[in-house]
Amino acid sequence: MSPKLVSIVGGLAVVALVVAIAVLPRLGFLSWGEAPATHAGGESVTVTGEADIGGPFTLVNGAGETVTEESFPGQYLLVYFGYTFCPDVCPTSLQTLTDALERLDPAVVERIQPLFITVDPQRDRPADVAEYAGFFHPKLIGLTGTEAQVAAAAEAYKVYYAKVEQPDSAAPYLLDHSAITYLMAPDGSLAAFFRHGQPAEEMAARLREVVGGAGS
Ligand code: NI
Image (tube, protein in one colour):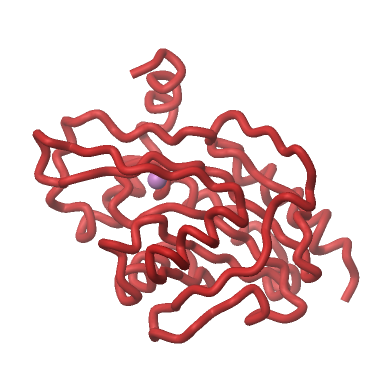
Protein backbone atom coordinates (compact mmCIF):
# COMPACT_ATOMS: atom_id res chain seq x y z
CA MET A 1 0.00 0.00 0.00
CA SER A 2 1.13 3.53 -0.62
CA PRO A 3 1.75 5.80 2.38
CA LYS A 4 -1.22 7.84 1.22
CA LEU A 5 -3.48 4.81 1.26
CA VAL A 6 -2.16 3.75 4.65
CA SER A 7 -3.09 7.11 6.12
CA ILE A 8 -6.52 7.02 4.55
CA VAL A 9 -7.18 3.50 5.75
CA GLY A 10 -5.88 4.35 9.20
CA GLY A 11 -7.99 7.45 9.49
CA LEU A 12 -11.10 5.70 8.40
CA ALA A 13 -10.56 2.42 10.17
CA VAL A 14 -12.95 3.07 13.02
CA VAL A 15 -15.82 4.42 10.99
CA ALA A 16 -15.25 1.79 8.32
CA LEU A 17 -15.44 -0.94 10.91
CA VAL A 18 -18.67 0.41 12.34
CA VAL A 19 -20.19 0.65 8.89
CA ALA A 20 -18.79 -2.73 7.88
CA ILE A 21 -20.61 -4.35 10.74
CA ALA A 22 -23.84 -2.92 9.38
CA VAL A 23 -23.24 -4.58 6.03
CA LEU A 24 -21.66 -7.73 7.35
CA PRO A 25 -24.24 -10.08 5.81
CA ARG A 26 -23.12 -8.96 2.39
CA LEU A 27 -19.42 -9.08 3.16
CA GLY A 28 -19.32 -12.00 5.51
CA PHE A 29 -17.06 -14.18 3.46
CA LEU A 30 -14.34 -11.61 2.99
CA SER A 31 -11.15 -11.97 4.92
CA TRP A 32 -10.67 -8.94 7.16
CA GLY A 33 -6.94 -9.50 7.21
CA GLU A 34 -6.41 -8.68 3.58
CA ALA A 35 -5.51 -5.30 2.26
CA PRO A 36 -8.48 -3.29 1.04
CA ALA A 37 -8.72 -2.33 -2.58
CA THR A 38 -7.52 1.10 -3.41
CA HIS A 39 -9.94 3.64 -4.75
CA ALA A 40 -8.21 5.58 -7.42
CA GLY A 41 -9.36 9.10 -7.87
CA GLY A 42 -11.00 9.30 -4.51
CA GLU A 43 -8.59 11.82 -3.09
CA SER A 44 -7.66 13.81 -6.12
CA VAL A 45 -9.88 14.68 -9.00
CA THR A 46 -9.53 17.14 -11.78
CA VAL A 47 -12.75 18.57 -13.03
CA THR A 48 -11.97 19.93 -16.43
CA GLY A 49 -15.40 21.35 -17.07
CA GLU A 50 -18.79 20.97 -15.46
CA ALA A 51 -20.39 20.05 -18.74
CA ASP A 52 -18.13 17.02 -18.91
CA ILE A 53 -19.70 15.24 -15.96
CA GLY A 54 -23.06 13.50 -16.15
CA GLY A 55 -25.38 12.67 -18.96
CA PRO A 56 -27.92 10.11 -20.00
CA PHE A 57 -27.98 6.70 -18.35
CA THR A 58 -30.25 3.69 -18.45
CA LEU A 59 -30.12 1.39 -15.44
CA VAL A 60 -32.34 -0.96 -13.43
CA ASN A 61 -33.62 -0.56 -9.85
CA GLY A 62 -34.31 -3.19 -7.23
CA ALA A 63 -37.76 -3.86 -8.65
CA GLY A 64 -36.24 -4.55 -12.06
CA GLU A 65 -37.65 -1.30 -13.45
CA THR A 66 -35.72 0.85 -15.90
CA VAL A 67 -34.40 4.07 -14.40
CA THR A 68 -32.90 6.92 -16.40
CA GLU A 69 -31.68 10.46 -15.72
CA GLU A 70 -35.24 11.57 -16.53
CA SER A 71 -36.87 9.38 -13.88
CA PHE A 72 -36.68 12.05 -11.18
CA PRO A 73 -37.95 15.32 -12.67
CA GLY A 74 -37.17 18.42 -10.62
CA GLN A 75 -34.84 16.51 -8.30
CA TYR A 76 -31.20 17.02 -7.51
CA LEU A 77 -29.41 13.70 -7.99
CA LEU A 78 -26.73 12.76 -5.48
CA VAL A 79 -24.81 10.10 -7.39
CA TYR A 80 -22.24 7.65 -6.07
CA PHE A 81 -20.68 4.73 -7.96
CA GLY A 82 -19.41 1.72 -6.03
CA TYR A 83 -20.23 -1.92 -5.38
CA THR A 84 -21.81 -3.90 -2.59
CA PHE A 85 -18.82 -6.15 -1.93
CA CYS A 86 -16.58 -3.14 -1.31
CA PRO A 87 -14.82 -3.76 2.00
CA ASP A 88 -14.05 -0.20 2.96
CA VAL A 89 -14.51 2.94 0.93
CA CYS A 90 -18.06 2.50 -0.35
CA PRO A 91 -19.60 1.87 3.07
CA THR A 92 -17.79 4.91 4.42
CA SER A 93 -18.83 7.14 1.53
CA LEU A 94 -22.44 6.04 1.76
CA GLN A 95 -22.50 6.51 5.52
CA THR A 96 -21.19 10.05 5.02
CA LEU A 97 -23.90 10.67 2.44
CA THR A 98 -26.49 9.41 4.92
CA ASP A 99 -25.07 11.51 7.75
CA ALA A 100 -25.16 14.58 5.51
CA LEU A 101 -28.78 14.01 4.53
CA GLU A 102 -29.74 13.53 8.16
CA ARG A 103 -28.36 16.98 8.94
CA LEU A 104 -30.66 18.68 6.44
CA ASP A 105 -34.18 20.00 6.77
CA PRO A 106 -36.73 17.55 5.38
CA ALA A 107 -37.72 20.18 2.80
CA VAL A 108 -34.19 20.08 1.38
CA VAL A 109 -33.94 16.29 1.50
CA GLU A 110 -37.22 16.16 -0.37
CA ARG A 111 -35.50 17.76 -3.36
CA ILE A 112 -32.59 15.32 -3.38
CA GLN A 113 -32.60 11.83 -4.87
CA PRO A 114 -29.52 9.86 -3.77
CA LEU A 115 -28.43 7.10 -6.17
CA PHE A 116 -25.98 4.26 -5.62
CA ILE A 117 -24.84 2.86 -8.97
CA THR A 118 -22.90 -0.37 -8.91
CA VAL A 119 -19.76 -0.82 -11.01
CA ASP A 120 -20.02 -4.57 -10.40
CA PRO A 121 -23.12 -5.66 -12.32
CA GLN A 122 -21.71 -9.17 -12.60
CA ARG A 123 -22.31 -9.74 -8.88
CA ASP A 124 -24.71 -6.94 -7.97
CA ARG A 125 -28.15 -7.89 -9.19
CA PRO A 126 -31.19 -5.62 -8.68
CA ALA A 127 -32.16 -7.15 -5.33
CA ASP A 128 -28.57 -6.81 -4.10
CA VAL A 129 -28.21 -3.10 -4.80
CA ALA A 130 -31.66 -2.41 -3.34
CA GLU A 131 -30.90 -4.27 -0.14
CA TYR A 132 -27.49 -2.66 0.17
CA ALA A 133 -28.85 0.85 -0.37
CA GLY A 134 -31.42 0.14 2.30
CA PHE A 135 -28.67 -0.33 4.88
CA PHE A 136 -27.82 3.35 4.56
CA HIS A 137 -30.66 5.77 3.87
CA PRO A 138 -34.33 5.13 3.12
CA LYS A 139 -34.20 7.43 0.08
CA LEU A 140 -31.06 5.87 -1.39
CA ILE A 141 -31.88 3.92 -4.56
CA GLY A 142 -29.54 1.18 -5.71
CA LEU A 143 -29.09 0.77 -9.45
CA THR A 144 -27.47 -1.86 -11.61
CA GLY A 145 -27.80 -2.96 -15.22
CA THR A 146 -26.02 -4.84 -17.93
CA GLU A 147 -22.26 -4.52 -18.20
CA ALA A 148 -22.82 -2.15 -21.14
CA GLN A 149 -25.38 -0.01 -19.28
CA VAL A 150 -23.12 0.35 -16.27
CA ALA A 151 -20.12 1.13 -18.46
CA ALA A 152 -22.09 3.85 -20.24
CA ALA A 153 -23.24 5.42 -16.98
CA ALA A 154 -19.72 5.34 -15.55
CA GLU A 155 -18.34 6.87 -18.71
CA ALA A 156 -20.89 9.69 -18.57
CA TYR A 157 -19.75 10.50 -15.03
CA LYS A 158 -16.06 9.98 -15.84
CA VAL A 159 -15.94 7.22 -13.24
CA TYR A 160 -12.97 4.88 -13.40
CA TYR A 161 -13.32 1.26 -12.31
CA ALA A 162 -11.27 -1.87 -12.84
CA LYS A 163 -11.25 -5.39 -11.48
CA VAL A 164 -8.44 -6.39 -9.16
CA GLU A 165 -8.09 -10.17 -9.08
CA GLN A 166 -7.70 -11.70 -5.62
CA PRO A 167 -6.10 -15.08 -6.29
CA ASP A 168 -5.49 -15.91 -2.62
CA SER A 169 -8.84 -14.71 -1.32
CA ALA A 170 -12.30 -16.19 -0.97
CA ALA A 171 -13.54 -13.20 -2.96
CA PRO A 172 -12.45 -13.71 -6.57
CA TYR A 173 -12.00 -10.01 -7.19
CA LEU A 174 -12.34 -6.53 -5.81
CA LEU A 175 -12.84 -3.34 -7.78
CA ASP A 176 -10.70 -0.28 -7.90
CA HIS A 177 -13.00 2.66 -8.50
CA SER A 178 -13.45 6.41 -8.25
CA ALA A 179 -15.07 7.48 -5.01
CA ILE A 180 -16.56 10.86 -5.82
CA THR A 181 -20.12 11.80 -4.91
CA TYR A 182 -21.72 14.03 -7.55
CA LEU A 183 -24.57 16.46 -7.04
CA MET A 184 -26.44 16.95 -10.29
CA ALA A 185 -28.90 19.83 -10.71
CA PRO A 186 -32.40 19.15 -12.05
CA ASP A 187 -31.22 20.36 -15.47
CA GLY A 188 -28.55 17.64 -15.53
CA SER A 189 -25.58 19.90 -14.91
CA LEU A 190 -22.98 19.24 -12.24
CA ALA A 191 -23.83 21.39 -9.21
CA ALA A 192 -21.16 20.13 -6.80
CA PHE A 193 -19.00 17.15 -6.02
CA PHE A 194 -17.60 15.65 -2.86
CA ARG A 195 -14.33 13.81 -2.39
CA HIS A 196 -14.07 10.63 -0.42
CA GLY A 197 -13.31 11.51 3.17
CA GLN A 198 -14.94 14.92 3.04
CA PRO A 199 -16.84 15.35 6.32
CA ALA A 200 -20.60 14.98 6.43
CA GLU A 201 -20.90 18.50 7.86
CA GLU A 202 -19.23 19.94 4.78
CA MET A 203 -21.41 17.93 2.45
CA ALA A 204 -24.51 18.99 4.36
CA ALA A 205 -23.48 22.65 4.24
CA ARG A 206 -22.96 22.53 0.49
CA LEU A 207 -26.23 20.68 -0.11
CA ARG A 208 -28.04 23.23 2.04
CA GLU A 209 -26.45 26.04 0.08
CA VAL A 210 -27.07 24.62 -3.40
CA VAL A 211 -30.36 22.79 -2.98
CA GLY A 212 -31.84 24.77 -0.11
CA GLY A 213 -30.86 28.04 -1.75
CA ALA A 214 -32.31 27.14 -5.11
CA GLY A 215 -35.88 28.09 -4.20
CA SER A 216 -38.86 25.92 -4.90
NI1 NI B 1 -15.73 0.96 -3.00
